[in-house]
Image 1 (tube, protein in one colour):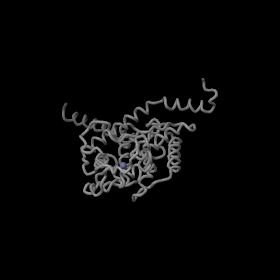
Image 2: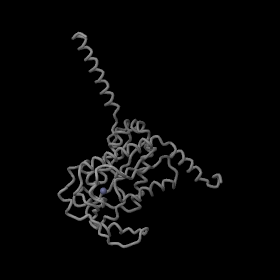
Image 3: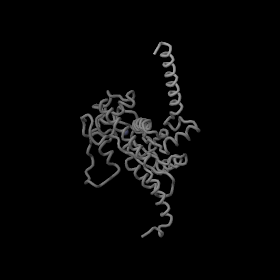
Length: 294
Ligand SMILES: [Zn+2]
């Protein structure tokens, strides 16, 4: 190739790359519900195949060293990155879950059970009305562990045209860097490590030992007996574990695992046409149970 034709080839290549870049920029839709324009929202729902995420957290103390909004900060980080890998529309900040057990601590916002359920139902109904046929709730808060399956289960109460799925794992079942603590729950080693990746500027490692997150063992009840005060009995400072041993290596491993797990869940949910079909059949039959084949 002579110099002239070489120059021409470079210019053509640059032009093609520029075109590809512009086209990608135009096609790339935000995963943030609140950042989309109205016309782009329609495209986003199509691109997501009607799959939306509702990340849920809470406002509660996180030991002496982590921010009150930790759970939602973590859950949103994961949901947004998973949606980047496997496109979905992510609903804005939602803090309205169950946290009666930390009402004694500063900064806790604890809504009534009626409001928690009503607001969540209204939210998923509104998401459904806006084309979200499949709604994945990504939970960042341990206190929601009972609320969310109950919410998902009671979706069978009356007919609607969307499915609620719940992803409620925050720690990989196995693998990764060895952990230093066995009591690793609220604001402990794992959660603090994740926050060191998500928002390191908000973690005060030097204060992690200012309170104890040790189990106080103040109740003596047989296994199988549940009572609401159990958490306060064991962890009165709303701290369960030891955040001082947190490290970025563990945080990186756990955050990556969480993002991958949610991304895989999104792929499976997009491919799942059975849940919606079976729900429709179920609602149809529920309207007149005497006609259900016996
Ligand atoms: Zn938390």
